[in-house]
Image (cartoon, rainbow, N blue to C red; front, side, top):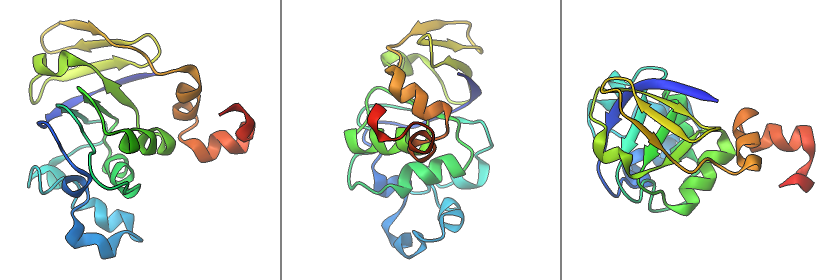
Length: 166
């Protein structure tokens, strides 16, 4: 799986409340409407300017806080093709994989800037900054998680294979 996109840069400790602000909790059953507010508490302009294929690059502990499954969903619905961070909150990490949002953990985020174009090869663990020409390696996801991502999420994976392979 190859992903290519323009970078939006965020810092450490971006919480699920930054991603899906609690004041819009009433919209959790209308995810398309909630998507209009994705990450607005971290970057006010983000929901209006994000484009399909864009990539979020962040620091440590991305997705901390409550286990709001709609947080990774609205990131994906906003058109974000992947999130690259130094580390992720574990519940956010699994929720993202389960809904088919690719995640990459790497310290290379310090060497990627806002607006850079990057290319990520999820299967071989290679990240290339197309703007600077720099290349980095990361630990690829385990094969079963790659299988979930390739099918677009856990629901389709279970439909196809049943739950005995997880």
